[in-house]
Amino acid sequence: MSPTLERIASNARLPAEADVVVIGAGIVGSAAAYYLAKRGHAVALVEKGVVGGEQSSRNWGWCRQQNRDARELPLAMRAMDLWDSFSREIGGDIGFRRSGLVYASNDTGQIAQWEKWRETARQFGIDTRMLSGSEAAAMTGGHSWRGGVHSVSDGKAEPARAAPVLAEGARSHGASIHQDCAARGLDITNGAVSGVITEKGLIRTRSVILSGGAWASAFCRRHDIRFPQASIRSTILRTEVAPKLLDALYTPDCALTRRLDGSYTIAISGKGTLEITPQGLRYAREFLPMFIKRLKAVEFGLGTSFFKGPEALGGWAFDRETPFERIRVLDPVPSRASVALTLARARALYPALQNVAVRESWGSYIDSTPDAVPVISPVAGLQGFVLAAGFSGHGFGLGPAAGHLAADLAVGDTPIVDPRPFRHSRLIDGSRGEIGEF
Image (cartoon, rainbow, N blue to C red; front, top):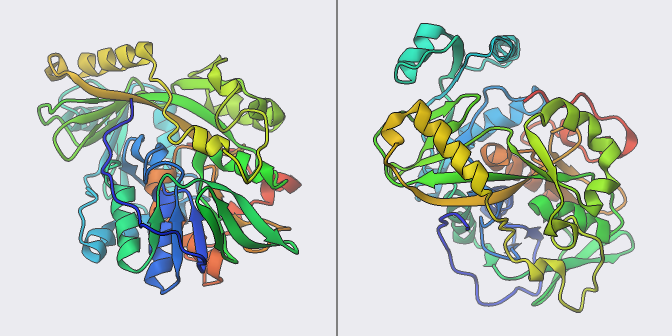
């Protein structure tokens, strides 16, 4: 079941040419299109399915600086400023609120890790404070905890609205939006992008941003570009409207986020399935250290994704149907067992949810890199091509700044942050750093 999503219309005609073509209309691609169009560039935003239809509408909605890897923090800090500005600039409410995020735990090791992160917070001036057990209890309705942390100025936005509202903002500045329009590949001339081949025709361009989420590695592979990427299948549920309990809470058992309409998104952090696929086997050695370190709650499985979808075998021709058209929206079936476990844990934590029904549940694929840091970067050997993918579960909150950075790189403007931590080459030449802690 797909989550609720605000739908927007497509432009009627595909442009013959554009200054920049953005492939993939999630939060990152929509933000990139917005900032490019706002600067006066002719932009075409192409999406095989619907704007925001995949991971950008399937996440918790958290917009945070707390517990970010130090390499991501400058991007996260800029993202928070951009989230603040959207309603004023675009005129549509994307649900962004600096509500604060509360983390609570009885795991002394986890609390120590949060305490250690405060050293990073101090370096960047992040507003965060540790909570005693009694303070954590007071902020979570009286539950007993050993401690916690409160990221005071962090917050949340509405996954159902964010990407569509941003895309409409891009259109208000002249961008065109093309849904049900898969990009089949790139037209390349003398080692440089010269166009994007879509199912509806060719768009001539010298600059492309690929923000294709879980599909990015497959698209790159079709053009002999190596991009190590793996995806974890997770399950999330949304309740009906419920009593006001809090705005956003993480615990080791489950996490809850209050939506604009008073419902809750509920999930279990780190729980998911790593499906065995041809792409996964291709990059297994590169991902093994990250899996060992971070994915303690992940199960392994073999399913249909071995034979179809972004990680399956096979290539395709540009003049006939491709995998992107065969799966317009990557919409994995949610795990019934995970839904039941998530709901049981949430109700044990908050008995007020006992009689609140589940409105919807959905599956999603969280695409990751071997070091859990995204790629936002030009790619050596293909002039005019910028890759923005591998956000490792952090893409929604980072989305505005990630899209801004991708836009900067695509047209040669001064980058919003130092792009070196996000360079594609680190995954190819062995220069990547440590695996992200969070």
